[in-house]
Length: 192
Image 1: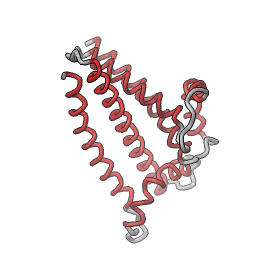
Image 2: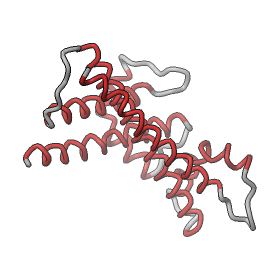
Image 3: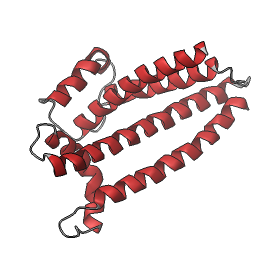
Image 4: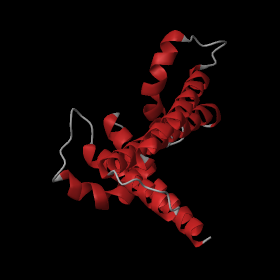
């Protein structure tokens, strides 16, 4: 019981921080302005971690690794703590266990990134219908545009209704199913 409460608190805290780090990564990657409420919130919640890491971890080809690598490390640590708290029988092969935990952390990071993209696309679509001139609308539109662009090239609007968000959400759900299937492959390394 206590282990479940600890896991719930850890999942919530680590999940929130991971999402903020991923949001910062996506906003810098897409060159979305941080001069808005969303950008300021993301910077305020992650600056304490990202700024010191930037001295040690440089960017790579326009990607902010100082935001991405701690998100992966957090998810990897969370996987390890969850396995430890649940009493998972970790095998004697430390290399296999390390690779399994790192792989599961990477898959969890990918899962969180997909959930973030789903939320951004949904918010962009809702704001485009309800209030396209809201201050946050441009942030969500700019974040979702690169993911929607390939689908918009293939799927024409029908009666001025853009169906590309629906197709993207379907594709992302399929990717989530594939990521869920890959978890078993890394879990096998843990008990080998």
